[in-house]
Image 1 (cartoon, rainbow over the protein chains, first blue to last red):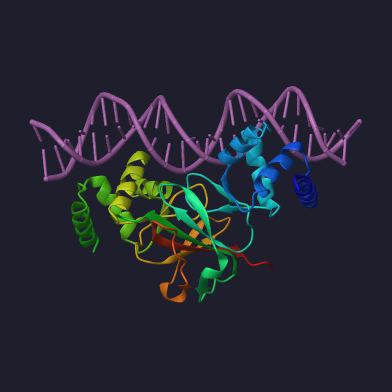
Image 2 (image 1 turned 90 degrees about the vertical axis):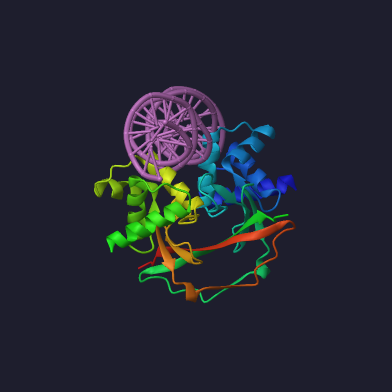
Length: 139
Length: 139
DNA sequence: ATTTGTGCAAATCGTTTGCATCTGA
DNA sequence: TCAGATGCAAACGATTTGCACAAAT
């Protein structure tokens, strides 16, 4: 199963014109082995080191950007200090817990958006992002 | 009319417990004199300097944060490395033009959101942000 | 052998902070 | 007067980049 995932990632990397290097495969494993994830570069770097794959921070940055260009993951626009990467590329939206900087998926089926506006001339809609910001309930 | 705006801003500043200093009034004028705006700190700073009010960058940062706390403006979480401030605090959403880092208001009436999901236990919804990302149409 | 990726450290960029000086009430 | 505001420069954290070395084809 780990093997299976590894092969799949190698294939996906090749398909994207990326050499399946040790580091990229390891990062890909960490990203995709556990279902949908929302990670910062820092977090993934720590996981990689903890998993015995001592990649450098710079490589994690490079790799995540390459994965993003390849469409394997996407960037989340929740808050501006840190960049979050989402391993789920399908159409879905997010909760963001303020103060805790935590991102959660919103189950797809719940949310609908109606009356999408016409984009300005010469523009088309690339993506619609909904972020529901949460705060702890007063008590 | 400029006078009127200035008085209003002084009043709003006082109401928020902020001394209406030369710099805050000038920045407030720039922010609110031209209708709804989406600005970065850098942009506002340049405008101020161009308008003959040589505030420091640090003061622009401080001031925008204080205005935000006072509820006069709000922070936009589009994506990008920079923080955008919105002078329109009412409930509305945004277009974001990719590559150009430009923010536009979506006219309120057009967009509806249905079936808002239940927030997780102990949480409540603070705010719902919709960002429609635009790209230039292929030709 | 050639091309591409990696690691490190230095560089960059947006933002924040410490502290001495100034200003509004 | 004097708490609060400002300006500067230094500090900071996230991200990027340049370049020598290593790995993949």
